[in-house]
Amino acid sequence: MRILFLCSRHNGLSQRAQVLLEELGHHLDIVEVVHGAQMEAAAERFRPDVILAPMLTARIPASIWRHYVCLVVHPGIPGDRGPSALDWAILDGKRSWGVTVLEARDELDGGPIWAYREYPLRDASKSAIYRSETTQAAMLAIQEALERFQSEHRPPFDTDAVTNGSERPLCRQADRQIDWSASSERVLRHIRSADSAPGWKAALAGIEMYLYGAHREGHLRGQPGELLATRDGAVCVACGDGAIWITHARRRRGLRAGDPRHNIKLPIADLLREQLAGVPELPIAAAMQPSLPTWQPIRYREHGDTGYLYFDILNGAMSSAVLQRLLAAYRAARARPTRTLVLCGGEEFWCNGLDLNAIEAAPDPAQASWENILAMNAWVREIVLTDDKRTVAWLRGNAGAGGVMLALAADCVYANESVVLNPHYKGMGGLYGSEYWTYLLPRRVGEATARLLTESLQPIGAARAQRIGLIDGVVADGRALVALDEILAPGNRTDTWVLALKAKAARRQEDESRKPLERFAEEELVAMRRNFFGPDPSYHVARRSFVRKQAAMNGDMAVERA
Image (cartoon, rainbow, N blue to C red; front, side, top):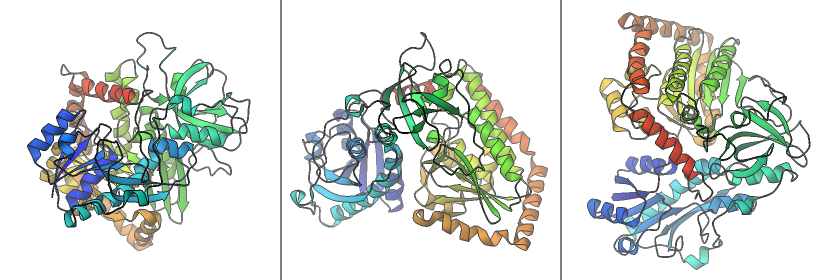
C-alpha cells in the first residue's frame, strides 16, 4: 500500500514503524508537519491508500480524514484521551498500560478503534517505557490495524465495549509537585513521569531546575533536599526515607546573561558547580557489584571467558568526559583474563556519537566539538587495535552516526531485533564524520553501499543490516543475552579462539599494508576541522537548532509522545 506518515517528529517509534512497513513491502512517504495545511498538501501530493500518524500532536483536519482513513497511534489504553497518557499512568501507579490505534475524528483520540495492545507497566522512566514497551506494542497494533484495513476497510471493535480509559488533561508541573520530604519511591515516580520531557521542576540548594535521570540509592541518607554526594556528573539527593541519584537537569534561571548552559539538559553537577563545593565525590568502579541499589552507568561483569561492558549513557550521547571514563573502563576490562569482550551499551541507546548538548553549552563549541571527536576516535582506535581478545558489539538499543561506526570497530556486531540504526552524519549540517568510518564501513558493506547508507540519511532495521553485512546477526529481544551467550560460546574454545586471533592479526596487517589506519582518521579529521572551524557555519547552525529545539520541547507545555 501507499502509506503517508504524518509526524510532528520522526522519532524512534515512527522510525521503527518505517522500518517495519518497508520490510513488509509498503511504499511510504514520511512528512514532518506542524499544521493542517501541511497535512493537506502532503495528502494531495502523495495520494495515499491510508494515512498513519505514529507520532503526531497536531489535530488532523476534517478535510483529510473525511477523504482518507487516518490511523493515529495513541500511547494509551482504549478510551484514554489527552496529551499526557504515559505521564498520568506513571503518576497514578498503573500496573499495566497500552497503545491504541484509532481513526482520526474531530474529537482528539476519540475515533473508532482499529487495534490496541496492552503491556505491564514496569518501574522506569516515561522515555524508557515509550522507547521499549510502548514502541513494541505500537508495532503490533499498527500491523494489525493495517492488515484489517486491507481486508475489511472498517474498524473491527465496538469502541464502547473495549474502552476502559478516560479523558485526562495536560499533565502540568502543579500536578507533579511534591517536596523532598516525600518517600524516595514517590519522588522517583514523579521525576520519571516527566522524563524526558518536560522534566520535574524542583529546587536544589535554592536553585530551581528541571530534573531528569532518577535512580535509587540504597545506602546514603540525609536531610530532605540535602546534596549528599556526586558521581560522574550526577548528584545524590536525600529524600524523606532515603536518597536518589539525579543525573541531568535544565536550568533556566540564576545563570549570568549569555551563559551557554541556559535551558540545556546537562549533567546536573555542571549546573551546580558552586553549590557542590565540599560535597564528596563517590566514584564506583565498573567491576564493583554493589549489594544495595545505586547509580552505576558503566558496569563490567564476567560470565566464564566472556566479559560484558555496559554503558547506560543518557540518549547515547558521548561527551569527552564520558569517553575518557569509557576508555579507562575498556582498558581495565581488556586487562582481565577473558577471551571475549562484549560492548553492551545501554538498553535505550547503544551510542549516538557526539554529545551535542555538552558541545552547545561549552564556551567554545568548535573546540569542544574537536575534542569530542578526538575522544571518540581514541576509543575506536583502541577497539580496532585490540589483538588479544575477540571484541563484540551487542546493540541492545538504537545507534546513530558515530555510534554505529563505534560498533563496527569490534570484530563481530550483533543487534537486538528491534534495533534501528542511522549510519550517517550529514543531516547535522553536512557533518563529514570520523570514528574511522571511511575504513570501517566500506570493509563491511563495500564502497557503493557505504555511500548509499551515508548519503540517503535513512534508518535501517536490524534485519536489513544483517542482509547487507553491516552486522553479523540478530538476536531475539526477549532472550537476547541467552542467545548471544550461545552464539559466542564456541568462539571461546581454545583452538577456535587462537585461530580467530591469528586471522584477525593477519587481516589487520593486510589492511595496514594497503592504507595505514591513521591515514583514514587524518583524512576524516581534515574534513571535520572544516566543519568545526571553517567559514561554512552549517554544522553549528544545525547543532544549535537541534539542541535549542529540544530545549523548547522540554518547556512547561511540552507534550510527550516521544
